[in-house]
Structure formats: C-alpha cells, structure tokens
Amino acid sequence: MGIRTGAQYIQALQSRSPEIWLEGRRITNVVSEPVFKQPIQEIAKLYDMQHDPQYQDSITHICKETGERVNNAFLHPTTYEELMARSELFEIYAKSTFGLMGRTPDFLNVVVTGMAHNGWFLDQYNPEWSVNIKNYFNYIRDNDLFLTHAIINPQNDRSKNSHGQKDMFTHLGAVEETPDGLIVRGAKMLATLAPITDEVIIYSFPGFAPGDERYALAFAVPVDTPGLKLICREPMQDGKRSQFDHPLASRFEEMDALLVFNDVLVPWDRVFLYNNVEAANLLYPKTGIAQQPAHQSGVRGYVKLAFATEVACKLADSIGVDGYLNVQNDLGELVQNVEVIRSLLRVAEYEFETTASGEVMPNAAALETIRGMLPKMYPRAIEVIQIIGAGGLLMSPTGNDFNAPEIRSEIDKYYLGRDGVDSLERVKLFKLAWDLCGEAFGQRLVQYERYYTGDPIRKRAIFYNGYKRKAKFSMVDEALSVTNEFVKDQPKLAK
Ligand SMILES: Cc1cc2nc3c(=O)[nH]c(=O)nc-3n(C[C@H](O)[C@H](O)[C@H](O)COP(=O)(O)OP(=O)(O)OC[C@H]3O[C@@H](n4cnc5c(N)ncnc54)[C@H](O)[C@@H]3O)c2cc1C
Ligand SMILES: Nc1c(O)cccc1C(=O)O
Image (cartoon, rainbow, N blue to C red; front, top):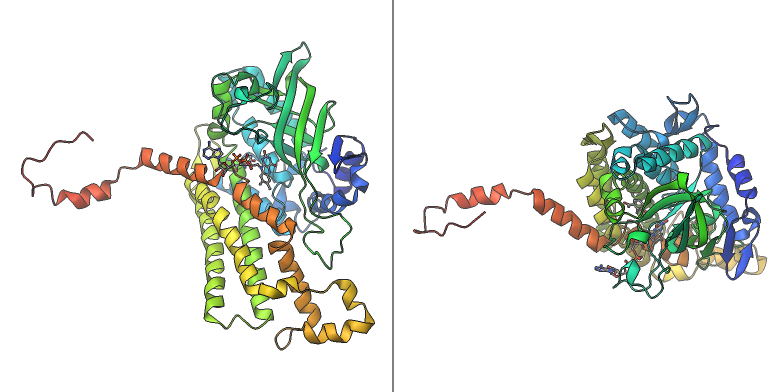
C-alpha cells in the first residue's frame, strides 16, 4: 500500500476497538471522543502531507524493495544525503505542530527502522528475532502504521529491580510460553498518544539485573489486542474549549497512557527479544535505536524552542517592554539557545558516523549534548515567557467577552498593547503564551522536554563517563611537561 492519507489513518482507527479508559469511562469510539478529536486531525494532517505536492518529495521516497512510495522515516540512511532526507522529514513534521507533539509517527518508525537494520545484534542471541523485526519493519512500512511505545516500568519502588517488586507481575513480564506465543502480564508506561495509534511496541531502557529475565522483553502487538488495557491520565483539555481561548492546548495535546497487559498473547513472530538480560540491556546502546530517534527529537526540540522564543519576543514587543535592557538580555539568551541547538544539529549531521554495517548515524556527542541542554533550555524559555508576560498572562478575557457588546468598548480600551497593537491582537498573543507557560498543557510540555529521553542527570553522567574513557587529557600533560625537571626525585606514578 505505501503512504496512507489522513482519511485512511482515521478509517483504521474506526475499524478497531481497543480497551481505552478515560476518567473512569470506557471509550468505545476514539474518533468521536472530544478529547481525541483534534489531536487525531493533527496526525491525519501529517499523513495527508505525504500526498501534497508541496511536501511529497521532501518527506517520502520510492522504496527500492517494493517500488512503492513510503515515508522517509523508513529510509535506512547509508549516505549523508539520506540522513538529510530524514532530517527534512523531521523538520517538516515538527513545524506542522510547532514541535509540540513529540511522538508523531516518524519517531517510532525511525526506531523500528534502526532495530530492523541492525539484525546482526539480535542474530547473536536468536536469529528468529532479527527475522521477526525485519518482517515487522516491512509490515509497518508497507501499511504506513503509527506506533506508540512504553519502555519504562511503572513508577512503584524504584529502589528495587523488576523481580524485587511486591508482585511478580507489577512490571510487565513473561508468564509462560505456549505453542502460539508468549503470554505476558503486568504494566509498562508511558505510552504517549497510545489511544490514537495502530500498534504498541515494547522494549526497555537498560537497567535489568540477573533475576530480571522474564522482564527482559521486546515485542509488538496491535493496540486492540485482547487483554491490553490503556489507562489514560487525566486529560488537560476536554476537547470542547475554543481554539480562540486555547489555540495550542485545544489542538496539540498528546494523551499519555499506562499499558496494562492482562495475560496478553504475543505471537512468536512478534517477539523480538525475550528472557535475555544482556540483550535487553545492550539493545538500546548498541543498535542505533537511541541515536536515530535522537535526531528526530533534536530537530523537533529545536522547532519547539524556536517557537517558544518567537512567542517570548512577540509578547515583549506587543506591550512595549523589549526596549528594556533586562528584557533584551533574557530574549537574547533565548535566541542564542536556539542558535546553539541549530548549530549542534548541523554538527550532528555534517560530522555523521558510519557504522561497521554501513548505517549513517548523526554524530552521537552532538546529539547527546542536545539531549543534555534542551531539558534546561526549554524550561528557561518558558520561564522567560512567564517573566515578560507577568500579570498580564492571567488577565486575558475570553473570546465570548469580545462578542459581548456591553463590554466590548472596555475590552478594546483596556486590553490594547503598545501603539499599533490592538486588543484582539494582544489578547490572542497572550492566550497563546498562556497555553505554553501556564496551562496544564504547557506544564506537560515542560515535563516532556525534561524527561522524554530519560533522566537527564543520569544521562549526563553516562555521557561524562564515556568521555572520560576516551579522553587522553594530552593538553594538560603537555602544559605540565615544562615542570617535569623542577622537582628532583619525582615519584613515578602509574598512568
Ligand atoms: C510527557 C512525557 C512523555 C513521555 N512519553 C513516553 C513514551 O511515549 N514512551 C515511553 O516509553 N516513555 C515516555 N516517557 C517516559 C520517560 O522515558 C521517563 O519519564 C523517563 O525515562 C524518566 O523515568 P521516570 O519518569 O520513571 O522517572 P524515575 O526514573 O522514576 O525518576 C524519578 C526521580 O528519581 C531519580 N532517580 C530514579 N532512579 C534513580 C537512580 N537509579 N539513580 C539516581 N536517581 C534516580 C530521578 O533522577 C528522578 O529525579 C515520557 C515522559 C514524559 C514526562
Ligand atoms: N526517549 C526515547 C524513547 O522513548 C525511545 C527511543 C529513544 C529515546 C531517546 O531519547 O533516546
């Protein structure tokens, strides 16, 4: 089939009935549920862009294997040009949502592309696993599917491993093997956008210890597989608030869900890894499934940071405060942060790395630096919006107030901005800013940037330890060499 349209994506959602729970209600028709309606439209738009002549050549290509047109997320990059074809896709998709939706279909499609093309890794443990992931890759590519994923255990007692939790199946684990497949039980989090996806893929960040064998798993199943429950967090909008009052929150909320597996059967051909702690721990660092999606995250994060920076600048200009030195200092800092991320992305792409199997990967150090810096830069951009908007952010009237003739003249008089900025323009801008910096929707966006890639503190520590393993510190040795002769009888220290 190749690339789907938005209508085909929505039709597929309508054809299934996954077990979705939202505020204590079982959702029977996800497409007509107000909370999901607009986010579904935003994803459908991405599918439609694949057919739009303005974007088609930038975000899709003809698959060499099938001759069909498929999305660039399924392009296995072996050249710089192919890496950039993916970069272009990431940027076009991110701009379509101002970077506010992190788990658009390209993200996990890139993960599966990476996993499937690193079959050598799974082959070492079980050749069937690499065949399974390759077939799965072909399936999602040719049907243009949208995946969610859950790679974290539920947050119960983090001081204990999976096998040390109170109940053996709090964390998702294998219960038994059957001729048809593996029976799995327990929960996994945090499956962003799960209710409006086609398939669920499970694997894990490293961290398994001996004894965790039953939890060392990777597999994929359709989102409506019997026994799989999706328990949504509280929504941050009800789907009925106006786009005037909440121009971002009303459109771009990504629902997050806990996935509960109640003795779910995973067919053997959908098992990619099982019962192997070493393989589960090495899958993420060894196969590029960290590096390739970090390219998507970096580009998307760049767009989101640039968007928040634009909002801060427009806000300051609209009320005539951007002539003040303190405000210029804050805004200049944000613009420089955007430039830092843009530059790091270019380094990641120009200084690409080619693996032994010929896969071109964006430069790991540059991507990891983005991963380390965005969790600080994005919250800072939001803080600057809060500081510049100050009390005004809390004072916006609603769209209905503009439509009430009895107060319209007061609204127009007391809500206008600097010369040339009328009340409507100023209020619209402040509402946009409040969605980003005040609403629960905006707070989730901050939390996403802090944690989407794992704990930023531990990630930075891993980054430093990797640097230290390779570093020679030769400049320091060279600088100290002039002092070598000064002290007589220097102790000979082992290097
Ligand atoms: C909005 C959002 C969307 C997300 N979407 C997805 C998704 O689609 N799919 C998915 O799989 N995941 C998703 N994630 C999950 C993300 O991967 C995790 O939030 C992240 O890995 C951190 O894990 P945690 O939330 O369980 O925090 P925890 O690991 O429980 O950490 C809690 C606190 O304890 C500290 N801590 C915990 N353990 C240690 C330790 N061993 N050493 C030192 N300090 C420790 C941490 O530093 C942190 O301060 C999402 C997260 C967010 C916020
Ligand atoms: N956060 C990630 C994820 O959820 C899946 C794959 C990779 C990442 C990452 O940031 O490395």
